[in-house]
Amino acid sequence: MNVMHSSGGTSAGTPATTSASVSARHAGAERDLFVVTAATSDTGSAVVRALLDRGSAVVAVGRDRERLQPYAEHGARTHVSPLDDADRLSAALDGATGAFVMLAPGILATSTDFPAYQRALITAQARAVREAYRRGSLRRVVTLSGWAANHPGARGPVWGLKRLEEAIDATGVPAVHLRAGSFMENLRTDIASIKATGTTGGLVPPDLPLPMIAAADIGQVAAEFLRGDRPFLPGPVEVAGPAYRTLAEATRVIGAAVGADDARYVPRSRDEVRGMLIESGFSAHMADGIVDMTLDVAQGRIRLLGTGRTITTGTTLEQFLAAATA
Image 1: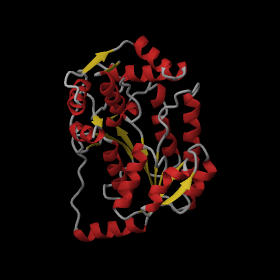
Image 2: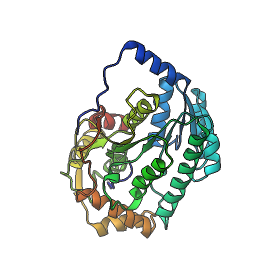
Image 3: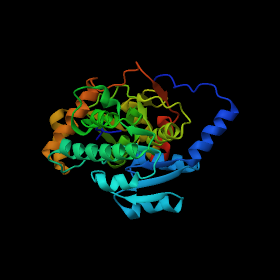
């Protein structure tokens, strides 16, 4: 069952630079220390990998020491902290010159007050960022926001995205907010459903074009902003993959990949989707929030605006699904 949750335009260009200026910028990046929160999430892990691949010093922050261990084996420092613990986050940010912050997990199935949970995460991360900025080391922050931040009435799991942007901006630290489109990772549930039954479905019309993007590409963009490989101009930046794609197309590609050539996407009603979520263990509060959010996508209230800065990334739907179904 496809539900849209957190996570076409022209590529944001990079001004021409001399080789000397590029070398100086990279030398500066190599002296930087970057902190990545929610480092074991899809996007957080992509940011960590992208930074490590470029030789940057990284502190990977997460709740589970064991899940952080692979980053330590690749040269990162690790720091155990939940995202609602301002004191431990502040300790993680000690000496950092850049930080990537986000709200995670994006869904808590049994939550009865998800906005309260997101408020706690926002408050703690903003306080830690403010303290690091006042100490003098922190120079820039990148947030994982989302296309839902374009909609003033965003509900459900994406309620906190614009509020995270605003809280980080209020700290005074220069910040870029990545308003990413529809995460290709959301298709994992569709892959499982098609493998099991040959069908998937949901509230989003099968022929609605969506700005799908892979988390790995968002991680690359975030790393480039943190390192200064892209001009760091504070404010929101929309980020999407190379083309808008539909769930009907995704269903066909998944079906072909898993040997279900007759795979079908079945439109479902609000009540059907809500009932399926509750049956699978979601609280009524969380099920209602997910349904409301998905209807905002289906009915065009959540969308990319294309009126400001945009970045187009490279991973295609076919490339992502080839790896995801392998």
